[in-house]
Amino acid sequence: MMAAPAPTFASTHSAPPPLAGQRVRVLIADDSAVVRGLVARWIGEAGYEVVATAANGRIALEAMSRHDPDVILLDIDMPELDGTQALPLLLAKSPGVQVIMMSTLTTRNADISLRCLALGAVDYIPKPESNRGVTTSDAFRTDLIERVRLFGSARARKRGASGAPVPVSPGMPAPAPVSALRPTSPLVLRPKARNGVTPRVLLIGASTGGPRAVGEVLEKIGSATLRQFPVLIVQHMPPVFTAVFAEHLGVRTGLPAAEGKADERLQPGRIYVAPGGRHMGLAGSRQDVTIRLHDGPVVNFCRPAVDVLFQDAAAIFGAASLAVVLTGMGSDGTGGARALTEAGAAVLAQDEATSTVWGMPGSIAKAGLAQAILPLGEIGPALRNLLTGQGA
Image 1 (cartoon, rainbow, N blue to C red):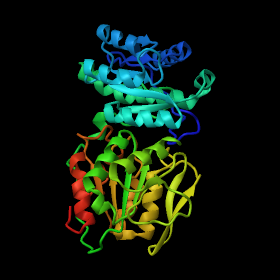
Image 2: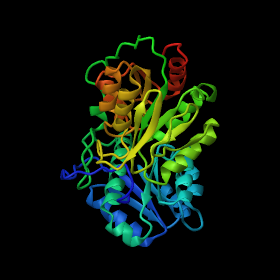
Image 3: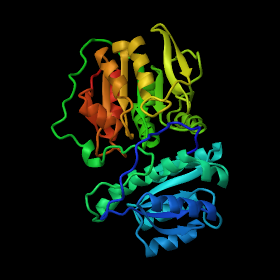
Image 4: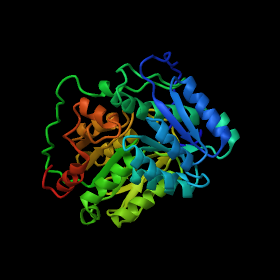
């Protein structure tokens, strides 16, 4: 990922040496020979196996017949058969393959990347605009290798690899492996809030896998209910992507949706998305709440951070807040969820089975901060019931 976008994931931890017995297999499809060569070298140095490279989607499809990749890094702009055309064909040929879209940071490519997520891609990586930018961007390298690790390890296990942990790229913190995200004892739900306070704001935090999950949740709440409340969303995304993401949500819900603007007054029936690269919080009193944007330090390796929004909402709305944490890597949102629950608010979390990555919601669940832990398909109706006073 480019240095400018958020969220930022950085660390000084060194990576352990590659471990034998579990090799994530990667196919790289990009029309630039420089990018293919460089990315292949990075992947090899991180301990993974590049099974094929392709200059376009057609060659990638042919390679699928000879190899069994766990992960495909798929560029959007390629000759003959581009990434958007190749994606459904690749998924049809190997339904379990994890496809990660790569694209330069433009409004057009952000729109295409989000559409590809709806078609079955698991994630996207904004790519520097020039080959020189790719060569010099440590952030892009770190993000790319982390995505390969994250999505490839689960697929490698499914095809019979050993259960040993997968190597992590240099300079990248090692998020807990899938097994470590599962509770060692039964999860404890927080008692349902019985304070008689009607929610006045809906808060949503999400990261990896979030664009699709957020859209489904809002759609299932229904526009009639959403028109009665301001909806504030922190989705870990780079600049440009957040503006396009808001547009997609507006189309899906039929409500005004845009990036939050500094000092903008909250209004019911509007969706506010935290701008990429900036924290979005709240200021004012419960009767007159405005958006607070700032460029403060990263929180939980992220900017924007869910914790920033949740903590401000706890201070201003207190028990009148309603929050949900959806699929995502890391633990962002846990501190803010604790502040919300201490103020008497209800917090819901997505369950592990339906999460792309059960990091953020898993952290909430294991901390005992969730009033309910629900499959994605049940979260929208549950939130609608809470917003309309019918209970979870």
